[in-house]
Amino acid sequence: MPLSHRSTLTQYLIEQRRRFPGASGDFNALILDVALACKAIARTVAFGELGSAASQQGGDLGGNLNVQGETQKPLDVISNHVFTRMNEWGGYCAGMASEEMNAPYQLPVRHPRGKYLLVFDPLDGSSNIDVNVSVGSIFSVLRAPRDAVESGRDVTEADFLQPGMQQVAAGYALYGPTTMLVLSVGSGVVGFTLDPNLGEFMLTHPHIQVPADTQEFAINASNSRFWEAPVKRYVDECLAGKTGARCKDFNMRWIASMVAEAHRILMRGGVFMYPRDTKDPSKPGRLRLLYEANPITFLMEQAGGRASTGREPMLGVQPTSLHQRVGLVFGSKNEVERIERYHTEPAKVEFESPLFATRSLFRG
Image (cartoon, rainbow, N blue to C red; front, side):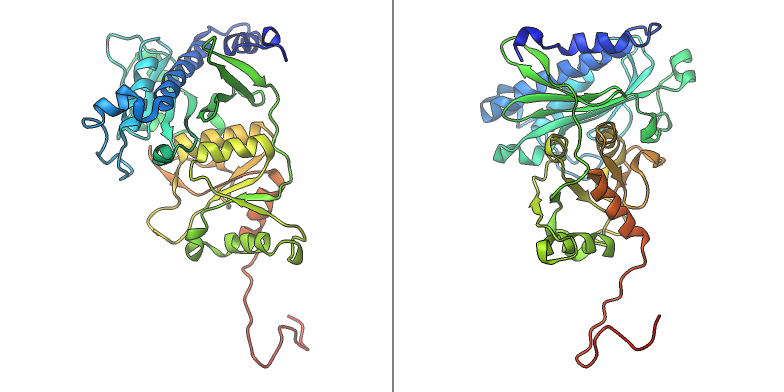
């Protein structure tokens, strides 16, 4: 499509706003501020070791442990700073929460406060920076409680503890060979590619849909000894290929950058699994519910896919803490439903005997 026939992100948001004649425009402005933050982060990431911000300040930034117990890289800190600074001043946010901050971010008193909450992972997959693998930013927009909006009070952790079904919008920016912004405002999923000449996000993927069936799955196989029986059953069937129960061959993928995994699935289908396991019984999963699982789930389901803990739909999970972890399975609808079904079926009992087969004269 010729460039002149493509919509910019601004034009797309204006068209969406026209469906709501009473809208104030604050929501559009917030999304554009988020997009601006993503452009700034994309530029910093693109310079890599050449980037003055990362290389010159690297000795003073990063190295600390965040609330997750993970070592922060300089770009984690820089990206978090960019997100907060670019979204605190416009009067659209009441507060923010991030993977890199222990508590909700309170807007400076000099700035007006708005009616939305912004939740984000400023640089997902940052451990892959050193090997030049695609990374990204994930974000979610929620409505602030009415009393917070009307009183202008500081936001609390409880204000953010909303199930994923209450998200107003969600998306991610992917910093790869091209920079893309993938977004849903509740009416499907669209993708924008950053035109480096214009500095604008241009609509390039107007109707993203996840195929219902797939022959690709993604999981960290090094954790297989910790998997629960339903997950092991599913993966074993995939690995058995044409000679197994599924009667078809599967490909396995693992990038270790969830935003890159989600993008691949949105583009061509697949299923991603980071399920609950027994590696650390104190953690019900690895991924963070509010700023990783929920926004990716919102996108998947808006694109016709499905996402689940394995036991229940992800968007119905009631958060109990700001940095709550959860198991996550998402992607092509039929595969996710199969994995959910395996979690509800009675566990298969493996029968091994050197003398007897599994059949018997007696019925169960």
